[in-house]
Image (tube, each protein chain N blue to C red):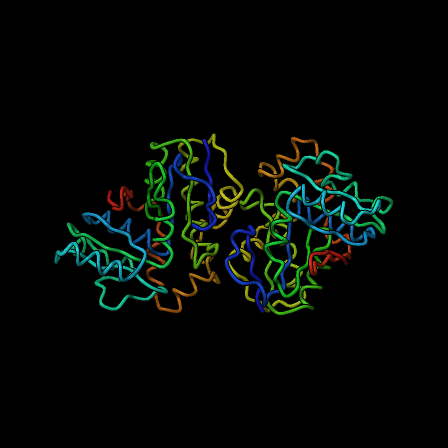
Length: 237
Length: 237
């Protein structure tokens, strides 16, 4: 039984077909997807480009489709919802379909789509996604979205949280170097995740945009049971 | 002034032409190159493949050429020296030419060869390589060799050591997330680097091969002034 961690989608050089994959984009895409799933969304279609999202919504031709996402952390003009999990209330999403595009998260999901099973993880559902992954198979790869193709500490700490939950389920696991490092960092920082992220590129970008409440929300641990799963182009519980 | 860190050669997506690059393969390729340079080697030619090394030595046609390197941490049949820095004594290398090929280190050097300046760093010359890099330019990228395309904690800790020396020269620098993380890890572990590497993939591989003395040698900090530099296919002081 093994846990591997990749800091970015681009750093995954191996074939993931025999792996259970957890994609993490803690600030904020997978937190949004977990929140929406928890709050009763019917399903989510992740797409790479803004134009694809618009086309997809048109094809679905349904007034109940929500266009969601961001570019460079900003809302997309004409879209219904941004990448803030605070917007994804039960009143807004229950029973609806989301078409979503984000800068980093979508790329990681699409990179990992050949995995044996593919789940979405966040601090919000760390324990729940660990249980689901463990029930699905022996070899787990956590793939972080990263920020613009680079290592992003927020995703690494979230992966550390998930790895700590996996070890609670079964302590006898091989961890690769980055998985070990993420666990060490999480164990050092878990008392104050927000402070430990001060100065990090992605977090400072969100703070500069006035999104401190989003950060606070996304850093809550184990407050949701929803485990979104990607199957054949669609994400649902 | 900025310091960026990349865990593997493959994770460098940007153009490095305006960067001063330090390549790190602490266990053991850059430690070997630093040691050989310190001990008077004339120059080192890094090549990707074993066959290329043999051809290059034949072209150089000189009995003073040393064929050096490893595959999967093992000596290469018919080569003069392995990837153990302990073999690169002044008696062995002074005034000679080395042709060298290693599994991970060479790839990182060749990936970074378009850099504005390219230096080789190790724990052995951490302070010296930091000074040389700082004198060469504002934007520094440290590129780790990694292990088989993956994040390797030995290289990250060595990068943390070099970053700490760079901050001693000038504390006012932007660090990207991985550079910050490497510095945090180095600061936590510097009291006992050997213990902190227990369980890491590459270190355990070397230990299983009986190379504990190599690890001990490579983890010595700031004991050499030599700063090997790569220019036009050749590495020299």
